[in-house]
Amino acid sequence: MGQTIKVGLMGLGIVGTAFVQALSQYQSDEHLFSEKIIEVKKILVRHPERHPDIRSRLTTNARDILDDPEISVVVELMGGMEPARSLILEALKGGKAVMTANKEVVAQAGREIWEASRKARAAFYFEGAVGAGIPVIQGMRRGLTGNRVQSIAGVLNGTTNYILTRMTQEGLGFSEALREAQHQGYAEADPTDDIAGYDARRKIAILATVGFNTWVSPEDIQVDGIAGITQDDIAYGLSQGWVLKLIATARRQHDTMNIAVRPTFLPHNHPVAHVSGAYNAIWIEAEPVGNVMYYGMGAGGKPTASAILSDVLQSVRDLNGPYQEFWSIGRHPKLDASGNIRGMSYWRLEVVDRPGTLAQVADQLAKHGLSLRSVYQKPLLGGHALLFLVHHKCAEHLWRTAWTSIAQLPVVEHVGSPVAIWESEQEHSDH
Ligand SMILES: NC(=O)c1ccc[n+]([C@@H]2O[C@H](COP(=O)([O-])OP(=O)(O)OC[C@H]3O[C@@H](n4cnc5c(N)ncnc54)[C@H](OP(=O)(O)O)[C@@H]3O)[C@@H](O)[C@H]2O)c1
Image 1 (tube, rainbow, N blue to C red):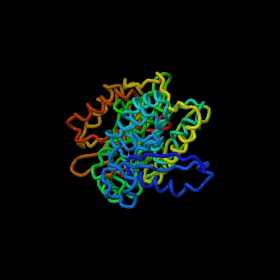
Image 2 (cartoon, rainbow, N blue to C red):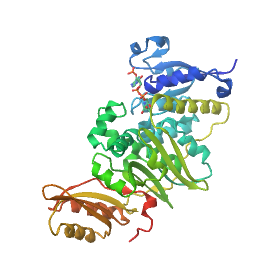
Image 3 (cartoon, helix red, strand yellow):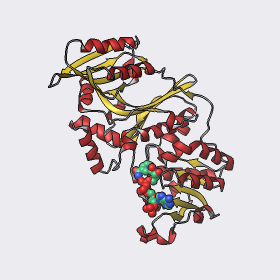
Image 4 (spheres, protein in one colour):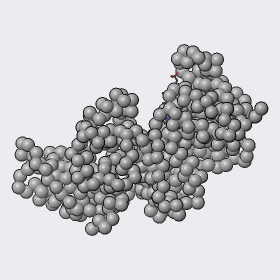
């Protein structure tokens, strides 16, 4: 009989249930579990009556897990900041290894949790917090050890990717695609967190923290969501050979890094442009490996349970050896929030279609030092027109100011959300 590792599980929802099921299903595989028996001893929930089949293991009191000396591993799958954060900290202080898929807690309180983990010499793993079962955290920390990561970019939110995919492939409008995503269970009743890009922002903060060995706070990251994207933007992109995705990017430049979440046009033949529906992908450029892409289902009980299972097994292996510092935080690179990052972007303007309109727009661009790469006009009914405009590379603070002043021109009825242009498309665009 092998050694029994006792686990305290906090949360028995979609992921918690899939984790318990996966554990019992694969427990008999000696190859996978190397003669260790992993037993979920206690499970914290709020409503035990919802789980009559395993009532004897349920508790509504977290102390039953935290104060049990037999429990050496805690799996937190409740979600949200509190009480998850406090319970994780307490478990670590008590010397228990902790696993979580909670991106909110990792992105917001990760630094404090990491400190507690280091002090107590107790492991803290969070593979499921980004990309569900896609092994990107372990992939970077172990598989790419020794590489210098230059950039991390990806589709990190399945809901927005589903919406944009349906808009691109079926020609749906934004509201129609959102309703469909809600109907299919991909989007919450209140989809703000996904649509505004906040979920992707937390995930890129976690990836940048791990990939660049530095602390990144999500609140410091510039974010533009997809609520303002229309079928006109999608169609314009396709006419240029571009596909629109919500892309989270973290790029290192010497001792600084720039991070953003923005709707982005990618060349249609780029591997990330083919990531459809609720799938996620993370594209990493590193030296000496070159380009690597991690791809898979970005949500769901089973994929996330896979990440938790892998973390638990990894921590069980660690229990027998010396404590290994997993997440080290250095002082560099630092986030560059100066707005000096150079890039190209696309804007859609609805304007009054009369002589001089284009000249007024061009005048504002010139005032802010922007030069046009291309402009295309589409007539609309009622004396209006759409202008699709792409400017050459310039500092972000310049184009953001120009965008705001153009939006205030009397001849401009509406300005759509700016869309970034993927890095490789920007070559030779410096003016
Ligand atoms: N679902 C996914 O596809 C997915 C993917 C990646 C990561 N994640 C992350 O995984 C975590 C769990 O997600 P989920 O979808 O499984 O959530 P869920 O279905 O809402 O389940 C949450 C569970 O936690 C329990 N719980 C919540 N607050 C509690 C509290 N204060 N005290 C005790 N128990 C509490 C709930 O108990 P009751 O039911 O009794 O109220 C429920 O069993 C979240 O951090 C989420 O962001 C989820």
